[in-house]
Length: 370
Image 1 (cartoon, rainbow, N blue to C red):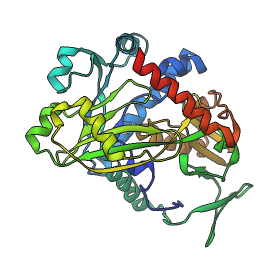
Image 2 (tube, rainbow, N blue to C red):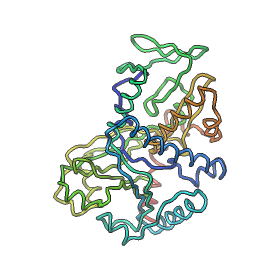
Image 3 (tube, one colour):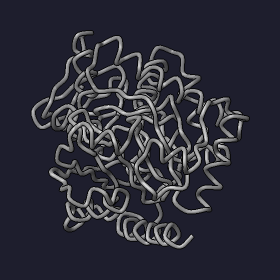
């Protein structure tokens, strides 16, 4: 394995830690892309991915603070109607046990008046992403994998024996896998055009103390709202609130990030008016144009997985499992994802970022107005 920086340096170590069944595009979009039958099969694979994640934690004794429970919370009446419909859809068409919590029931667990209810998923949850990534790396090395950090790939030479070239050496292999997501640039140009790097950011409060932290989210679930430019948050082991959001589609870091995250946090939890954010960080996720996962092959022996669109904690492990099956000659489940048509972002290299920024401004306005 070749890693440009250190294991967990990218989204694998910096993400919000929310492990949510399904994919970034949502089930309705996936049905529009491939039809209900295949969308259901993909969703069931996501459920398998959640099972595998839990099993890896157990099997390899990874101390990553796994906690059960995730709430998707609407803010506007339109979002409430859509979320309630999703609860019904999961139950009747996907055989997936989620619950609708009205505002009063949600308030019993979440100390905020901002939301109108919740789709509560007891099977999804959250974890410490860097500890999970490092635990997987240790397990892989124990199984015989060799990891080279600080080994940025500069070129992939395709052929019967693909070759990864770096500044100081090269690796020749039978099968190649591209799994760098937003950070793989220039290695496979036909993939670059089909994802966009999006900055997302997280703030960690000062330690709140056990009682005050528990009072914010009593059942220790993870929470994400339904806005296009969403807020997401959870508690940490050391009794901080980890509050994420403030996506940047321009690739430029937002000004006064600490102040911005503090204001967003206090909009949800005004009772934290006296609490400061001690740490802030961010990084890039990759989104596809349709927000659906993009898995497949470039050649018979070069595989790739990208387009996780904010749902990578489960889907990355799923992609690895499916690619390993395909390399062993069982490609049916990986090939299922090849049915999703992926198109380049419009505008080419010069205009695609400004066009995406303009589109996101529209969605933010939509969230604000109705």
